[in-house]
Image (cartoon, rainbow, N blue to C red):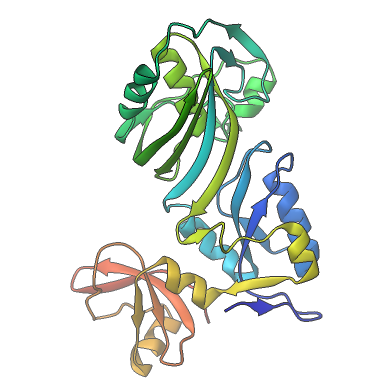
Length: 294
């Protein structure tokens, strides 16, 4: 179920956009701000201008939910091109080196990608949004600086090789937040001795939100709808329905004495279905992580 915007009122909820190629994530946010009639719009995790697919936006008080959504699993379709390295590890950068791929076999490619399934240490691409001494890494690279980023743990839960038609390799993957598919293309090319970069990237899912629930900017312009914040929270986090006394405690940010059914953040709801807050286990009860109502 989704809610439509009404005149003079910005809806609170999630908008799932199928981002077009050639548009920045900020450009999508700007467009949705105009459609929603509010500046209170943000996104959960950027997509490169070249990339397309699922971009999750929050409108109104749902923007506070975005930081929690950013931690969820993501899925992508991608095309890796072997035989060339670029300054950005994708097709938008300048070519640094070209190498022959005629000696590479399909089996080597598949075996090389298998090594990246599971928990790995990945060095992010240098043109990432990671901050280095207070400045984004991509800004430092743009200014001609050499940027070296530390490896960080990420998890690739599943990686499917759809086609090896050298120099191109088409893959799909499910991975943890913080995984750089461009870095995967770069590292595969390094391992095979050919160099490599990304030529196409489409995000197919962010947590429970996938392309089936995404809408283009043109569709949103015709009929602007949001996923209500309660529905978004219930579909993303384990849900706990409270009684009236517990709901009153949550509204003022008190601890709950009840034991939550699992680890991590849980969405808690009033008896009438109103989404109240995110809580997590703490000692014999639960403590508030973020309260969304007064």
